[in-house]
Length: 454
Image (cartoon, helix red, strand yellow):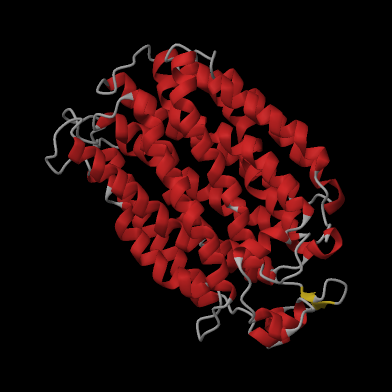
């Protein structure tokens, strides 16, 4: 490897210290991938209700993304751990996944334009199928890319790299979520006939499809992964260990202690996030626009405003990420606790907020939590991994993101009737979940490897 291009070698970490340009290239694809996920989280509830889904059934649609992720992420991690070819180790998945992701992304917003009929089984089935495909190929792009950061970034640069990853993710989220609002201002119709998704949303998805392809290919052609010999040397492991296939069950059995402890925190974190995605639009429509009719102009305006709020918390996350990037690795758990408490206040207060200005304040607080939830668990976990089977471990770790979403979706069928079918109170429950997560952070044992726990 050309060490002038790769940067100086950090002898303490055993891995090269990357240049700013290299970190930029590694993380840039997250800009496009985040657009796909942000449109899913900010517009999926709106789209499903627009084409005729009953609010009581929203949990059904929100089960599919985490279920797909839970099934494919460990497999992707294990496969990419053993993938070494001319394109690299993780990058081949992005090379082929990004173009396919761009195509399947645009299926969902057209689910109301194919003549299935408002609220019909065919419309609901097509929407569910589109959601599954979108999440499948978004994961094909995102998971190996996230593992690339673990492969190439040393411990001293992890805070900065994971922070910049989230900065790019938030920038993509901002663009994706403000597009319906901006397009409305520019004169694109934000209403359509009953059962049809407005053009503002359709065009937002089309733009995202282009961006995810462009940014994905940028990363593919501007990042050079370590070859097997370099990887083994930098991670200070036997090269033969990078070729051994270990069962996922055995990896779970030998997982570091922090793997399980962080996943417990993750359970309540993502439980809360699921209810934000599912019920925030309905909460805004009721509290601020005083409507529950998904076909009304007020409800569609609330959908646009939720997009703006998503941009608000993404901006807050960017600012917070720049602050966190300068933090010391020894203080990670304190940052984790603070972020989750801020998010608990933000989400819980949304149940009672009746003005746009206060909703902005609440989402700024949540933006700190959103950054925290998407960055701190990975920095804490990867400091306990030694480079062996890191992709598989990250894939297994992401089950801890998917399982709570599935649990939250299933629990919604019980909780939603218990709170009187009030979407506002589901937001309050989301705040409580984040507060429980914060209480559990001090129990995490960071940096304790699998070998030390077995």
